[in-house]
Image (cartoon, rainbow over all chains, first blue to last red; front, side, top):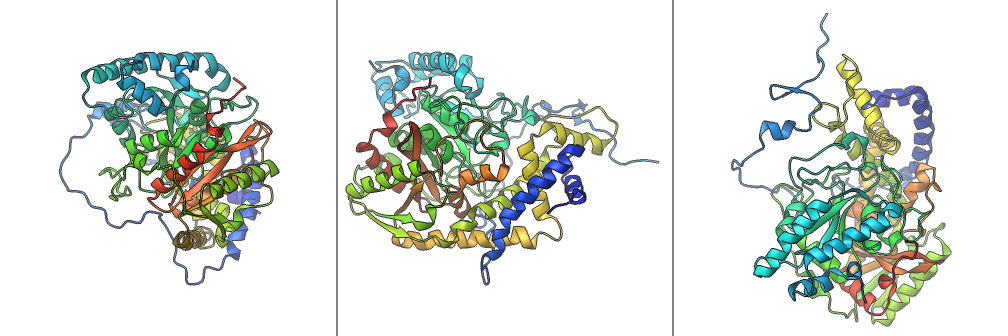
Length: 96
Length: 486
């Protein structure tokens, strides 16, 4: 069972704003999902190494050559706010 | 007389090259069909009619000059709204990307444009491809052309419905845990998930990067072969795309599966599978036997852990992939504050829907300190077990066969419990975890609703499952039936 504080903490880690109502809803839904996922603990994985990727490849390389890129205008076309070809955001460092 | 929208891609291709029809006529027929039935089906997030007619004219010019002809030249296709299309909105079914116009084309789109396709529109989907019903689209649910009160499955429900309803001759979707095969099954069309690495993921908006693959929908195996051929192959922009040579998939369609060894996984007959689905698939297996295949049972003992492992791994990867939506670079941005963190948190709160948030939460939890070993690492080890099951099975068998989905199409709103919805993908998830290929083909009906037959092939053995699909089609007519609800 996931308590409210855990939900609040996970939401903070994920930078996900959450209403009081959603804290309760996700708490109960995640608890049900995790209960069902408990079956994983029954699997005998002794001596088994983890699979991080289904790809059957290692170290695919491509030639390190310069290629044309995009103009700042093209890349900033979707930006919510911009100034002088920079993304504009609120102050990151909280000053005194 | 057959309507133009009823033709398959290979039939239309022949008529185009013989100059018996034009791409403009073919495209107009599909745009008319969209106008007639999409108000009921709601498969498209965007219909690109002007662009389509322009591309059709260009295709007709190419055909007239007889140069640079490809099997897909002049063919109207639909694209899932998770595949980046340069300058054309790519919403991922999300408020977050409602107005997002990618500055580049996905590699798949580059291949398709080079072939001279006609894009009729972008298709609806569960938000960020998370879901099995297309109900989690932020915009509207898509309806199943076989019964408008039911879902088309998901997450590529829009793509499956366009092909089922004759609004496009073929479509592309993406499959992370069954998102091509399950809607294919529920809408009575074929849907192929290629082997991991067969198709470039560049420009496919990421959900679970170790699981995602782009793949085609169509109304017969020959068309699937053409649609896969057009996009398969290595890509310098995706280091997980495979340098393995791409065979000629059409050549694989010999019509004969005599002597082919087909395994029936015992663990895929789980409680909860509808009797009508079991009955249809049992009959299909008999049909394969009649065609000369050697059919016998096989055990994949780790199957029971598939859904659980997937619902750790996919959300974990999603929680990392979706961290990029911060309201700074692109996408929805909450600006009604001076505080940067509040802006970020509220952008994500209002930009994402409930299912996406649920998965970000689940993934973040599974990766967080203290839970990582118990959940994520354990799931990755179980993933190895599932992969080993398939490796052993493919030593003895050329392909495996099962139902695609435990149920036929369910009603919109019928499944409200998230975990119940996750169980829709119980038969499709293992292939993504193992990175092998799979296809769903029309396998019959239960109370008037389509049942999908899933064929699983070893890595890079798309030709084998396509050969079986093709042979099966020659003796059945399920794939030729049209939905009656529209």
